Amino acid sequence: MKDKIISFFESKRNFYIVVFIALIAANFPFGFRYFAFSDDYNAYGVFSLFRENIWQDIMAYYAQYGMRPLAGLADAYIIAWFWGSMQFVLLAIVIMRFFTVVLLDKIFERSGVVWGRVAAVFFGFFPALTESSYWINASSRIATSAFLGALAAYAILKFIYNEKSKYAWLTTAIAGGLLAQGFY
Image (tube, rainbow, N blue to C red; front, side, top):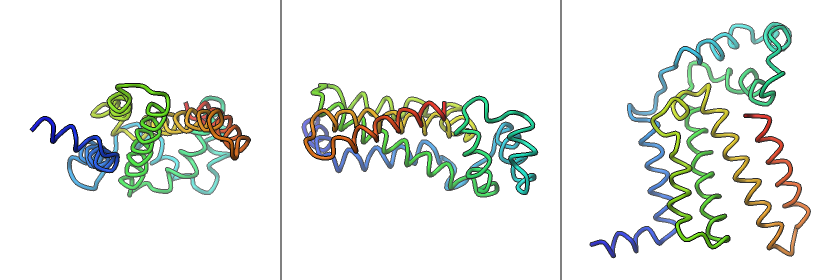
């Protein structure tokens, strides 16, 4: 039985399917719905009231652009538009976390890390069942930064080991790293 389980997870396809299903189950335990937390109301609920002049009324007045500038812009101009249907934002976060696991798995495999797949799963599920996985106000920053950081690391490996498109991979690595800093 143990050998069947191990051989099942040796297949990348099976491994990725199980990881995706587990991420969906961990983040949508009550079905495809989202119950907003108080900070979600403070951020996205308020942004939805000031849609006409978000920059002037909120971003500039409260200097929201000073810390985590990309997160503030994404909150005001992207996530707030989904107020009332935040389960779609949570689904996007779950998909980013899934691709973070995929990228980390590829990074660890290329680097020869023996327990890389286990490490990728722990990293991808680390915030599971905490405020930073379900609570959109926190997880939008954490999941986006983790994804962009994993993308930057993957791009660095592709730059080092790939003969083609070296500068495209280098540009992706630099952009991913800088964008990750703008979110967290």
